[in-house]
Length: 71
Image (tube, rainbow, N blue to C red; front, side, top):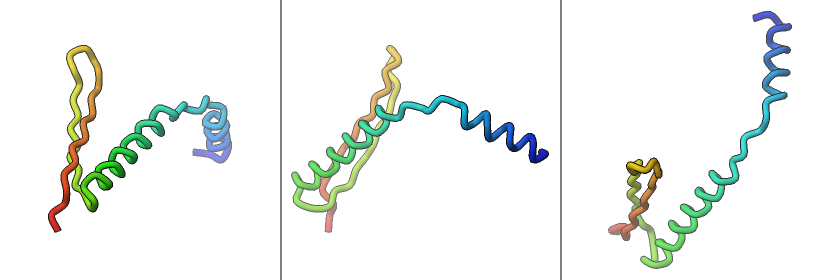
């Protein structure tokens, strides 16, 4: 690639619309809250299991299961 090609590529990337990551940030915040609530419920460290599946209707489901860590 020539410097001109790199400049054109950088310009094209800069002109691309930004992605809306707000739903991603909400989901991560909700997962962190659930983890904190599980720690408060059990009074200490917890282990977490995550299950994911896609339902027949196209819904993507993520399930978190928490249990107290054995010390």
